[in-house]
Image (cartoon, rainbow, N blue to C red; front, side, top):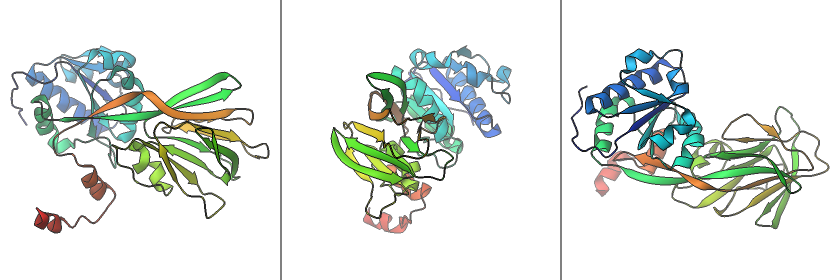
Length: 310
């Protein structure tokens, strides 16, 4: 499909990232490059994406490569091709640059990747014409502290998960929020989720769906050994501390956004709070969170009744 030439595009330098080495991802990368070459706009692709085995780099045309950690600082807009996991991975390196990020959905659900392949040229044209909306999403920062020292830290756009690894034993831990005792719990673990992550693992654990505009953190127990233990929603500015009880019998592990887990020992504390940086998501026109819930979560939309209301 030939695109319309845009004389004064809203963005001047475009970055491209992809993670999965799938034919569908490679096909969309080719299509994106063709589109922006027609616009005469400079393109950058990070080294890791450029080295995907299925990618024919010569097919991309005139495109420069750059270290992934530097891509966000060199671009006005970054396009991430893949599923939500690809965008979560991209967020780790792009959040510090405050560059707008838009996702092309080549995954399964795609709550974070707004553009479908069939609409790619139309949506990109609209974005270059200045028709889009920006939305900041906050991240969580986790620290494992031992005494006064931080021995490990990471960040997450979706969630930070305390779990028991491969063990079938429950964890035994204490939870504090803003210095106040909440509970001692026996469970398979705890999910600390942002509103962005409320439609991911936390939802599978029985947590609520939280609108992305909310400044809140949700704590979802994983298979708690009591019927009264329920998800808790607290302020986004809260500080959450978890300490493993001395009677705990298995090795607790912690993971941020599904990355490889790290151990949390009995003499250490897990501290979770809002990350100082935010990720700026760019949405093309027509993106609606509730419509996404209806289509991706299988809600019955009663489309004809909405039409009558209008």
